Image 1: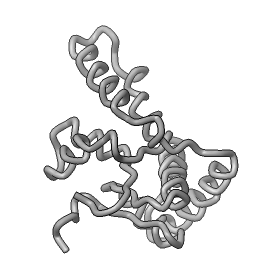
Image 2: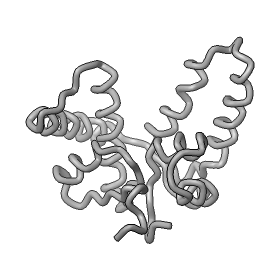
Image 3: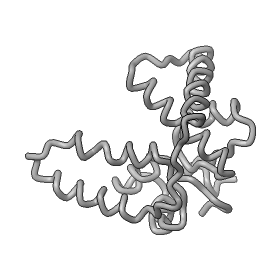
Image 4: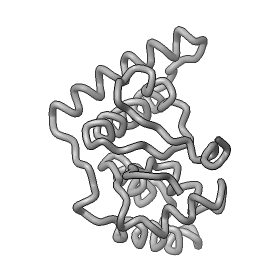
Length: 161
């Protein structure tokens, strides 16, 4: 388990629920009421309500799982962005996109852009609150280089150092 206060990124939840990733993911979900989450992560998790086919036989089970997960998040531990946070995140996402493009990658679709803005907003909120982001998303490697004071813990690397 990570030391100190942490904020869980969306992929922690998705991979833990799917049974992917290291055992630390399941331990993080067990500790969920004590851990922090950014509002964009809640939105990304709620996205499945609109995305899943309501007529599919497995949809009700998946929705119940996500609803239970969202209900276990302590509202006092959900970081909600202010307008200034959105503006800072938009600028950070632009700088990150430029850095990714300079490294040979690209932000090609509207989905890529929205995901990068969401990650940037999560990074801004975590840094502002003094929390480390727990993730597997390499966008946060770029953001950690761009944002002084942003701490990122890659869960696939925990315990390997």
